[in-house]
Length: 395
Image (cartoon, rainbow, N blue to C red; front, side, top):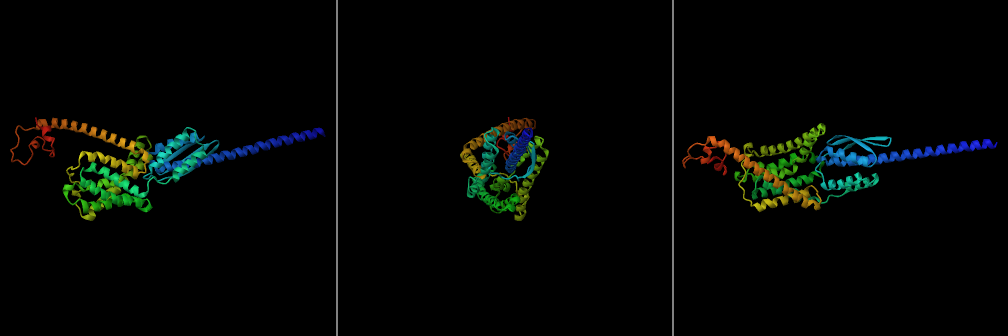
């Protein structure tokens, strides 16, 4: 009897220990599933936010999501197109696959600047999944740094700063102020009307074209109509999509790059069709669209200050934090300086090339004063009048 009792106690102990291990295994499995679900949810939200701000390209999205997954104890893989992603997350013995959608848009850059420190903290191991998810929620729910009237003002200033680059005249600046205000009102309205947002470039370019042709392009001395329209439409040119598409194609992301390129071209086609609709609606000849630029009447100080206006408008229009105004302004002036230097060097090279081409063609005599053609045109008959032409062809 004592032996039987001892054996039964031993069996009960073994059974109890086995049951305890089973319960611990179940609890651990549940914890693993819970942590996998939390990790998948965080990475899916992160992917969606990156897709909506994917002007920088798909390669950045993939690197950011994979790096965050590894830092949080898992692995992630993505199959990307510009507006969607198939996300597969692995942690422990579990795997989850979800589909995420996010349409690329003119994104609030305050969210981008807040997202990068979050990714850095996750990568350095300073945040777990739950805390990272809470910070991501705060980023998603953060209100815009500037109210809509300031965004409207920012779009106008953005265009005004760009206007002297088209024609350095005060008439160009004045006409841009009116046309850009119209474009800005439509852009703000599109934030609240999703259907308008889909065809916003077409609507904006049509309205701007009609107003420019009927009101501002009445005199050829004011420059070509297209030169008057372009500053107001500059905000809607998909330059970031074109840059990202080029980078993706160069990196071998053929599908993503090709789709993004087609979408960028579609936006450009909308702008072109809108301008042409305005031309047909007003009965304007298409030959008048590209008239010569007007003579400059702006001082150099005004051109210099124009880039400050442009930078301030960029900050307001794209919701960039105020603390980044000065670094952005410095970057703008450095870019302008490099571009001006390059243009000057190219101009000198072109002048030397023109001199070499014109030398064998120079006739031995100059035309009489009664001749209508300028004296230098006998040397370079295919050229248009230019103050630099005599020095290029004479000697």
